[in-house]
Length: 560
Image (tube, rainbow, N blue to C red; front, side):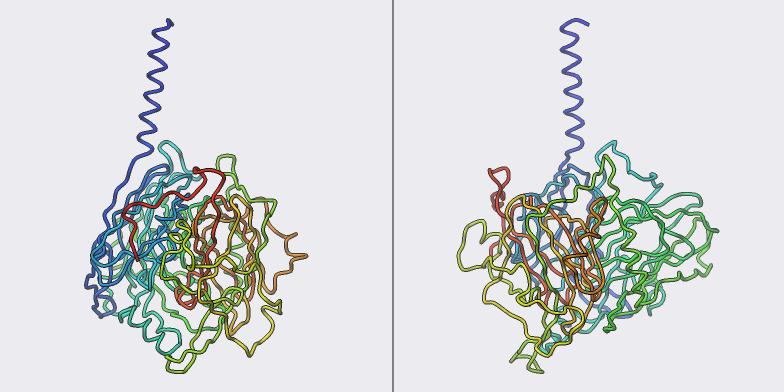
């Protein structure tokens, strides 16, 4: 081969690689028009806030490595912001979405383009409104396909379906919340659970409101399951069919078979299902998990799995769901979750910890002169009820604005106590004038133990950390023992998530590397508790140079 031939061959290889890179790094653009639409469920019609008139909203399809641009135009009467739940947004908190944390909301008649890169992530995530309780109807799936030519680390499915679990209120959700605030009590619970916005045949007027999927005998299907419910952890099962869990929160897991899954608000789970049963119709069902004895919507949402060629007259069978308070099933299921930890998808859990944090989760009662009973229910971390600012925290941090927040959130509770055993008479929490944040050094490793308490009541809490995945290295029932419990940590293949459930009357330990500068929200993903103040934020400092610092804000960033 002569020099010219070598040059031509090298140039051809370079050009092919360039083309492949171009194909892999596409720009995907979506337009989201936030608009009000009349929708009927359970014999009740009402106006709801939607994206593009759809309930649930449109699915975003993107490939790992793509750039994603979503232009949101707000035609509704409420301020709006949208969170892309689980996307890491490296150095790009401006696109994360929580109102008054990383941005001011998009006001009526205004637009904002969320511009983000999908880097080193693949799988199922989701998007939802992140202001008020508007995510009751403003939500949808995000499907991130692997890079072109990269196979799944599990058998290739023949087809796939998205199943988004949610809640439905017959009344206007924002009015329901306002009424609860006036009373200082929890608002009225939902009237139904839903699967892809439909409650199913156990509810009135649901002939048209039952979701169905079709299977072909002998084929394998991937179900992308998302819990978009506001306040309920849910069990999910399929009559006559087992499921193989292969991914949670867009991270591959060691596959395991199960008859039911537990999925908390904010979480996603991918399962494989084989069409290996007698041709027929089978119910898929979702029902609440609540082992703290608190009131909850215990009604069952139903969808139908129907084999091809089977007539609609065949009556489906119901699956065996765990009982409402089946703690054992919940703990066993979560204990089975392990990261894949393969050479291609390693589990890089931090083994050395620079910063140890211990946060107690509590409910409380504070004085409220404007409330009907003179008091209001509240919630706290380390006895601090978070106060929302009037200016976005990330904007204040980036611009070095004074008087917006402080960085003195405590690393541990003010006074140690018997967290899950004692009963208390003083249930008042601390509310500062300004939000209290925790400052974290760039690239430091953090271990955070989240401890449930018996302040008012023990309860399971799903916690979501924005801007990061973390490793769930340990969990247990009762009080965390700092001397003995760390020895039981899984530091080999712990599950990697963005949302984790803290068990009722128990604790969960997570680890992460703080390599994403910015202001990142952490909160309970039960909307009721978030509204009561069960939230905080981390300020992760910039790194050593501009490539490890928060990017400049976009020109169209909304103003407060």
